[in-house]
Length: 215
Image 1 (cartoon, rainbow, N blue to C red):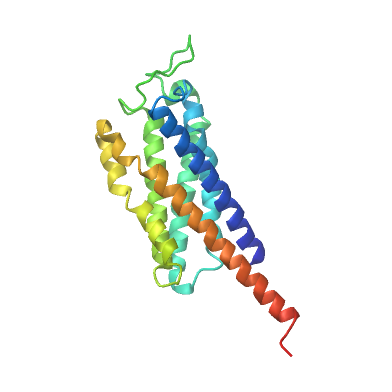
Image 2 (cartoon, rainbow, N blue to C red):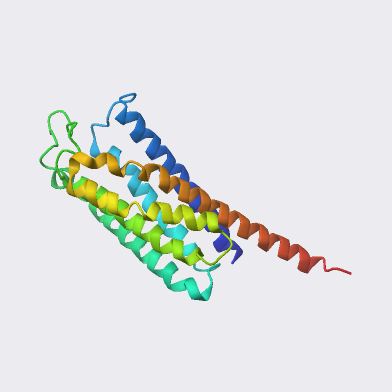
């Protein structure tokens, strides 16, 4: 159990760092402080790195979870597994197959109208965000009756981004509606790391109590 809690803490911390860095880069790119990456693989690479780390994080919840919330935990990491599998399969394909309409083979540029039309990678990007939000939404109800109300609220806040993600995908010109997701998701991951840290401290305190019983 200690190893699972340790893995959960480490991978949730890694996920939060990747999500925060990805959100910061997208904000800087949106305000034109840094150039937009010409290669779509570089633009979507954080999603590929984030998917397995988030999957392992959700799976680690299965150990400290209550029996009554185990179904929510399992459903959450099943959605994370689908997301991870989808991203790995898509990123292993050829660039020309993924985005043939906007990829320039002479210059290597993908153009700047990434969100102007539904390319395959944009569809995968939205599908990934939707699956992650659905996963965090279901995961939130596993902590509804526990003392960690801050974790429940942060997971629920990210899960409630689902309608905005769907609207921004159907109507690309309103893609800015989904922009809060780059803030709510790292915020939820931060509280997940905090939860695993507290669980680890409880186990360490319990181990000290067993090794040094009260006389």
